[in-house]
Amino acid sequence: MRSSGRYSSSPDAARSRPAAPAPALSLLLVLLLAGCAARGVDPDRAPSENLKAEHLAAALWADGEDLKTFAMRGDATYRSGGSSNFFRFELVCERPGSFLFTAFDPFGSPAFRIASSGGSMTAVDYGGKAFYAGSVSGGALGILVPLPLSPEELLAALSGSLPFRPSRAEAAALFPDGDGDAVLLAYPPGSGRPLRVQVSGGPPWESASAKTVRRVSLGPANAPDFQVSYGSWEAQPRDDRGGAARLFPRSLRAAWRSGGDHSLEVGYREGSRGFTSPAGVGGSVRPDGYSLNAL
Image (cartoon, rainbow, N blue to C red):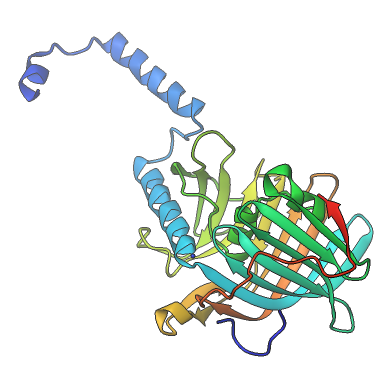
């Protein structure tokens, strides 16, 4: 896993129709506004703003999906309650939900490894000589790591993109302490709560190439259940684009409230984008002499 090199996703009929009486027209307007409010659309917002939000949300998702592979080495600090843990890590990702994560001990040796691929998940505890296996659909990731995310959501968060193709999006008010250029609500297909996304960058809104996600949250705007805040972004080369650069976050901070207050601060020291996925990403084999445990 460790390596010093780079890593090698009818107009006529309408004219003849009598005009609606004023009371009926007023009632129709009230009903339309009520319907908008029920869907969570601000009736005071200009339609063009919601159209802009839809274009931007679609572009952010497409830009993220275009990058199939990425990897990084970095540092992380996990805090829960009064405790804090610092560790160095190495991570190789292949969309939509395959990854291989390794945490190292203070001496630089692997301490823990988590792999996900095809709906299954494995983990190796080197210190305890234990091997774990389970299903992602059974919540295995949540057992290993307290992040309330699926593997697909985790990879999207790490790369600063949306985890789903939005069924629709609308302009939204800024975060209470935000001053970003745009804030939108991106709704997932089917049912589910929207993501509130704060984006820096200007038009054209049909493209995400010159924009960066500053913050993504799920839940109430004033006290989100889960939130990722991004630090600096840098243009980094992609192997699959002949070295053409793309924006990628260099740091992030995730905070969530499920099971208490937690936070995870991540900084990337080096990375690679758009490489040919190495064999074995998302999988690991039980070492000899390690106990087998179900997740």
